[in-house]
Image (cartoon, rainbow, N blue to C red; front, side, top):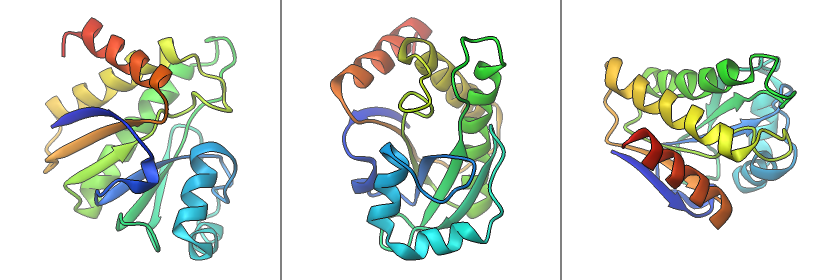
Length: 170
């Protein structure tokens, strides 16, 4: 059910994509920009009606021109050296996105590596937080997920998540 793969998040054939969004939800660089470009201008228009989003929380929109029916926008923490509850906020993003997927009725969902790009969260620290949050949530919450996929955009990210998975014994 939990899969870690190398690829382009915007190409995933799942019901919901999780976007590593900024608090405005109006697009940006990296994953956020790629999702906004692939979904088309309707996504920005829909996001402009949501009033932004707090760090560690999520909001959802239709997927518009994406294969996915929904985009779940998760605002991860900006790395501040690990002293600003970044781990708690990062884990909250993954849990909140999974819960939102349940609310939307999806069975398949794909995540990027939240906060490890422009927000500077070190991959070696973010990967175990992400995997623990996902696996703990799946083990303890009622859900209908048949696939939860972590999509890594490069081999460095993939290696970090594979190492974290091995360390967690999954």
